[in-house]
Image 1 (cartoon, helix red, strand yellow):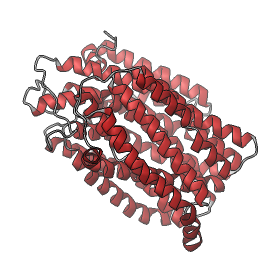
Image 2 (image 1 turned 60 degrees about the vertical axis):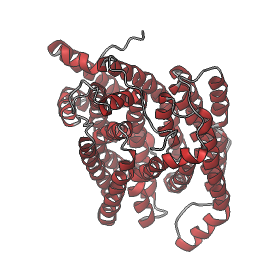
Image 3 (image 1 turned 30 degrees about the horizontal axis):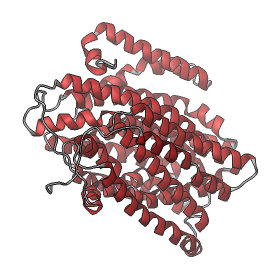
Image 4 (image 1 turned 45 degrees about the vertical axis):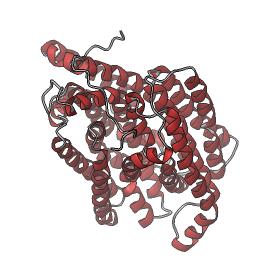
Length: 503
């Protein structure tokens, strides 16, 4: 790394106890997770508003539009949020350096959005697929790009210790989208109106984030770094970010290209919109734990880490937390999928397909959760350049498997490919962490968490026909199981939860 760059070179505090770092990671994850849960629940309503009002076929077109816009808008992110979460904590670059870098990257997004207006209809006529119109695509590119700015301001607030302020920004961002869409749909607008409402929805969150950021101070003094150097150092994370966005969408893209215009595409996209939001849980947990995880990696690289190679307290704590969250989420989703699809869809023919697709895709959730901590560990230990290769392997495998399974099994085949690809990525990522000397223990907590789901599964299976009852009984049973484990193995529970109280 060049001298004066913004890569992480932390000061080593040998007397800093790893357990206190794990407690800090847990507290940070708890605040971040609470903000994400509330805000994402609000945002998750938006796709299903479109589905119910516009129908499955139009919803499938909206899905194609969203996926393309999201991938284009990733040009405006370029891995800068992940790099900032380390550099701003370490004091190796100023916030202004990152803001200038984002402005340069956003210029690329603006050019892409302008090009989308005339180009998208040409692709639509030539290939018989692709976005329904260029204006809609440009508006959704603007939505994702502006949302990225709001989330980046949240990252800056978190790095300055203002976790509650970050929560307010996320709540403003995620609540504005469904509120705007609901307003235009109730007014009789179609897909263009939905796209326009979404494009404007991040503006209040950006204004709020900028206002809150002015009231905080940097955690440490830092040198100004040229924007070009920031972009150069974020390049591996940028490639990884684009691949990461493409990765869970490969199966949808293959299905939409082979079954373009059919309702099956819309039904499959509805199932994915139930599974995808679950990804906010591991993202929030690892984002909250990232400062402590980074400091642990710094101590380990300096030879001052007192923990075992595969049992570092922050890594073990975060992996166990995600296992305890991911296992019941997967089991619960598989059990309530039929009732959930009945509530979301009007067409009875699509309910069975959507439910079975959800049940298959639920098997990917435990791996999806653990992949987040594995990727964060590689970033923390300075192996971010490995991530694009790992994700590219997942994308290539997913494309090959989907190309084989979708013609045979349709949406169900696409879901099966999604599951296989997520578990492959976990295996590859875990091996990479061991090679980096920063192993993450994922197998043991996964096995125990899945076994602990047995009482919950038995309880929920009897009331799966009622979603409120299933959620309530499932949550109570899972809590009772953990309480029983706390009495039988209190030391283990203390290791996983630590001290959640703020000093």
